[in-house]
Length: 346
Ligand code: KG4
Ligand code: ZN
Image (cartoon, rainbow, N blue to C red; front, top):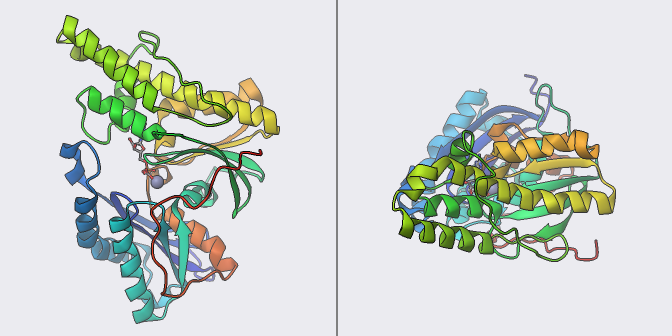
């Protein structure tokens, strides 16, 4: 790989994955992710444990990313890091680390918004995959966020719709928890659903105005349904695990698609991308791909490696900011909440 291009080290520590990646130009030279198994038994991410695990992981992860890429610290053009949104304690580990690294080695810093990065992951150079064309719509679905974003340029993004309560990933994880599955339940539901009957059970889909989403009602109706069935048959979950997984997955995916189709029609935009952890879901990937024939969409589905949290997406966003010379000093603090609000005029 030519080193004539900028070499960006990306660092991600917003939730429960510690990740470092090296990009040479738009190509990934390494992308190392240390996931934190410690949360599994708690049924969700425990913030304090996440911070401690980041502290243990960050140096070895960065070291491995540089070694695997065959890049030395002195060759780095810049360090791109997640400033927010996310868990403050987790973000503090990453931001403190990059401040020290930048100061010690005199390497410029680039701050990255985690949600923008999920979207810009589509611009990582990947053989056989085209980049979305502006303007496109991106359904960003993760454990913390569920948004439809109108992307007019690399950093011109408007949120058209948002969840008013739980995120789609949370809906998967909570349904899994109700079924007695460990955290994160999304991938397990996906697996079980493979052999299940998605029409066996039905759950009411939320009716929320405009392009917004809601998943907390679905969680409650799933919980009550299972509680009532378990009273009649204590083996209900065991006997219906696959069908329950397939059915709840269908309802979540349909709820997402209803709004995405509406926005696409109303704005007349047929360039459709998905991003975030839930974009790894096979039913959602299929529903989006089917949109090619059904709605004449051009669809963009990220490789699995760039769906859930990873530093390659931070580094590619850093690459575009590097071209614009958008650096930051050392006097910043991380932010926990999303910076961008819904534009309800769209
Ligand atoms: O983007 P991400 O890694 O972290 C956040 O920024 O939140 O997303 C994690 C979420 C979790 O809720 C996880 O259950 C969900 O993505 N997820 C999935 C699948 N893979 C990950 N949900 C459904 N199906 C999957 N295959
Ligand atoms: Zn994420």
